[in-house]
Image 1 (cartoon, rainbow, N blue to C red):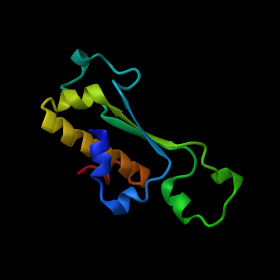
Image 2: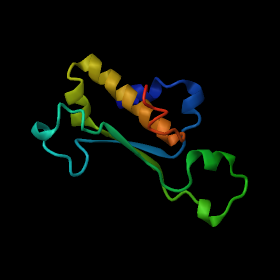
Image 3: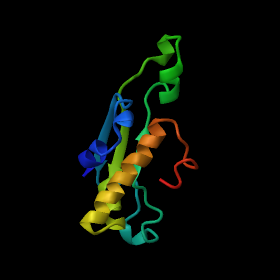
Image 4: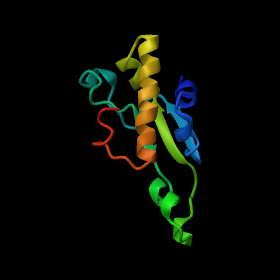
Length: 119
């Protein structure tokens, strides 16, 4: 489902994604057991973690310095059990994965949570 979500992105966005690892894990580290979460609204579906310079700075910075070295791939981690619990039907799960991928890639492109609220 994650591969389908990535392949479903418009070409103009796919061409701008470089050095990003997309991982799937069961749940976030330290998450409360499911019965203690308030109907999954407190759970996290994904996380973006950057390494090195922000995407926009990498694209617009003409001056290269040793401080702008990219230490490794940025990471998007999707939390499978949370996504599937929030959207139990297969079709809904596919849409939830796609929305989560788009949301986390929005962070890769430098967007804030407020800008991504409707994604």
